[in-house]
Length: 227
Ligand code: E4P
Image (tube, rainbow, N blue to C red):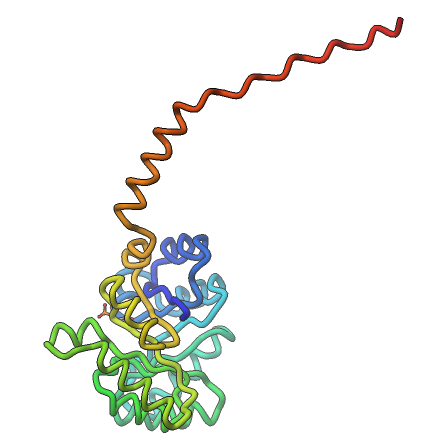
């Protein structure tokens, strides 16, 4: 399963890329707004930094507007993927964008049927929002499992990005469900490395190592006298 970083913060992006586990980045209008930077300048910098797909979200609400905005965003970089909300006008636009070869990520997916429709119109990716579904008392991961089953049944090539993930268990369950990608904020990415027993083990080994005698330095070799 690929891991995407869910952020528009350049310092987080650079740091997580250094860790070697980031396959792409997803942004959204709220994340961009938090940076205080003009969107398209920021998008260009993110796309130039990330060695993988970068999702950039449209804010137009009608199909013609979404298509025009998507073309502009796609022109920023070859790795730009255009995020379109899972609404009827959005899916009209996704079909047209697929015909033009522009990659799309249908976002704010909150039901299995929305994901089914997105695949039918040729979405490259869908982003079901598991954390927000859990908050509503709906089982977010069950939606992922249903989408995976339907995509497999009909051999849809649309990839599932588990989005709105809140904790490592969402990441674990995404992988068990066979999701293609999970996108997570950097704090969840950090938690994936951690286990208290690992920390205890490291401390035990370091304490033991401190008691190991130091190596003896080899005696210096006497210089040749030439006699
Ligand atoms: C994914 O592409 C979205 O940006 C993201 O996961 C939204 O999640 P939220 O519920 O934390 O806003």
